[in-house]
Length: 147
Image 1 (cartoon, one colour):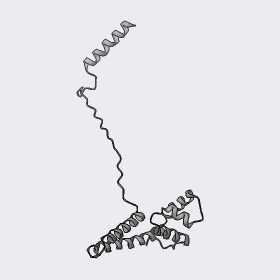
Image 2 (cartoon, rainbow, N blue to C red; image 1 turned 135 degrees about the horizontal axis):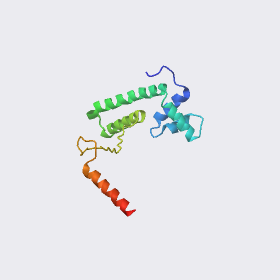
Image 3 (tube, helix red, strand yellow; image 1 turned 135 degrees about the vertical axis):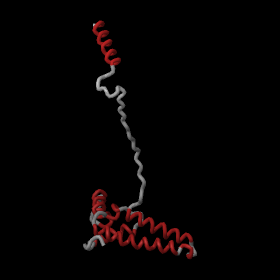
Image 4 (cartoon, rainbow, N blue to C red; image 1 turned 180 degrees about the vertical axis):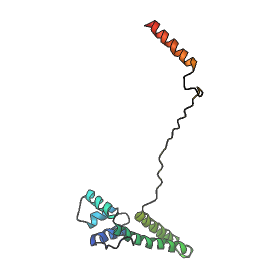
């Protein structure tokens, strides 16, 4: 268990609503169980609730139940008379696990990398090549002549 604190009545009602209404969000659960009609306040309450250790512990205990349902259904896969019931049981249990733990998503971001290569073609000599110096001298002379 993550926390030894007990849940308040509202926290338990929040969890019950959240789990009993599969399509409800945390904000909707907070709107239904807390004294607010403001969706922004309800979203804040839900955000805070999902970070409280005692609520996380409670949801994890439900997750263990859902995991056992998945394992049981998969184990009994070939023994049920209705394949549709098996499929629904697995989908619903998996959906609840995704709701509690968060669904795994893949996020890809384009990355660019640049490599800068500096090559000294002048050799080990730290002075510029003579041809370069001659070109500079010629350009200086030409600019003085034009001025």
